[in-house]
Image 1 (cartoon, rainbow, N blue to C red):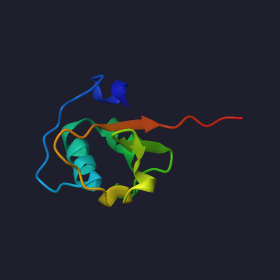
Image 2: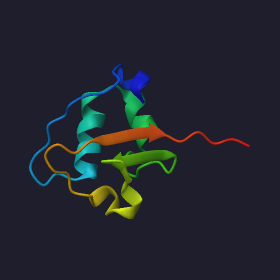
Image 3: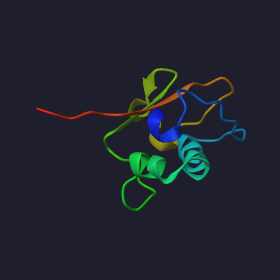
Length: 85
């Protein structure tokens, strides 16, 4: 992800009561097309199943998924999952 974004980390300001879905939309509009293909399925709205998203080190699947609300100071990590065998 950081190669596609061209940065190791980035502070992004979102509106109060923003969700992960809101953040991802903002990220996809802010960065190049490579980010969109890494984050979303072909429909460009469904989060790819091979993308791990953490809020304060907790996977969003055990929270409220892409409807997880963000608060001031939250740290969100976006990581592609490598599969192999």
